[in-house]
Image: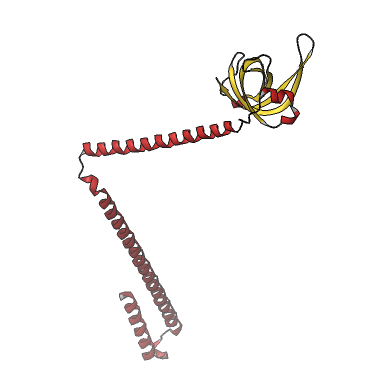
Amino acid sequence: MKKLLSVMLLMAMVIIFIGCGGDDGGVDVEELNSKIEKLESKVSSLNQDKASKSKEVSQLKEEKQEVAKELQTLKLEFSDYKKKMEPYESLSTAEAEAKKIEAEKVAEEKKKEKDAAKEEAARLKAEEEARGYETGLTYQDIARSPEEHIGKKVTFTGKVVQLMEGDKENELRVAVDDDYDQMIYVGYERSIVSQRVLEGDFITLYGTSIGTISYDSTMGGKITIPAVFVEKIDFE
């Protein structure tokens, strides 16, 4: 502000000097005009600086207000946090540890209950699926009328007489009820069991009747037996 007043005072003195001087005084008018223009330019520049400074001051005020708002928000959050922690601040270390152990125990019990519920649901689902195979069809039914029962669900228990393993599927010959006169052919994907089926195993199988299969016996004759594709195997 002082600079601006000084410049304006200087300009006034120059104008007075011009007014008082004449041609005989040897005053260079062009030089004076040049000085006046420079002074006016300086005044303009100072005005621009003043406007710029005012803008910066305004921005700083806005930033200050934003910081004040953030500080107020943090204070409120901290106050809420302190209220929540008040019940625990008065606890001793032992009490706090006891509460922690109790909370972990409750969480573990809830997890066990959840796991048990999942296991029970899986068991019930397996039982329901197994009941779906209880159609009442016997070995005699699928042996005497194989075409009539193709696609129907069946379940049998028997002894594994022969095992033929493949890359993805295995084949069995099973004596139903350990009766070698009630032999069935069984096919299944290896992925449905968690352990290998071996000759001599007693198993309960759940599957679908697929008609019959024929093969040559060691005596040279042809043998035809019922065939079942199995979806589930239980070890007895």
